[in-house]
Image 1 (cartoon, rainbow, N blue to C red):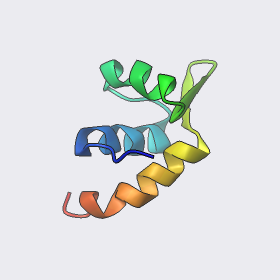
Image 2: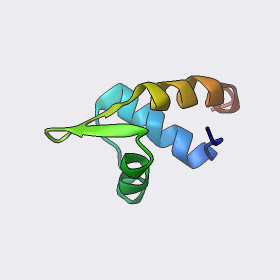
Image 3: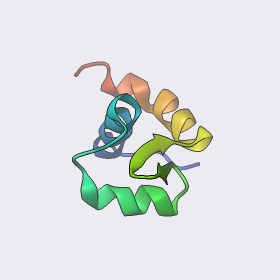
Image 4: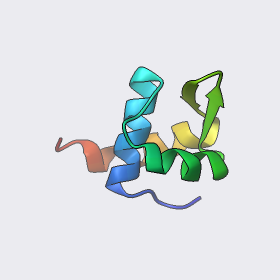
Length: 63
């Protein structure tokens, strides 16, 4: 697994909380990497995406 940038982690956090993101450019990349799935217009994290978000969460603590 690769480490995600702060920008990507914030997008994953947004998807986890709302089922969507304002970061439309990242969506295709995250879908291709199987980090998120699109279930009838509602985005969700895969197990890989959840793992990356949890692992990267310390870098978001200062927000």
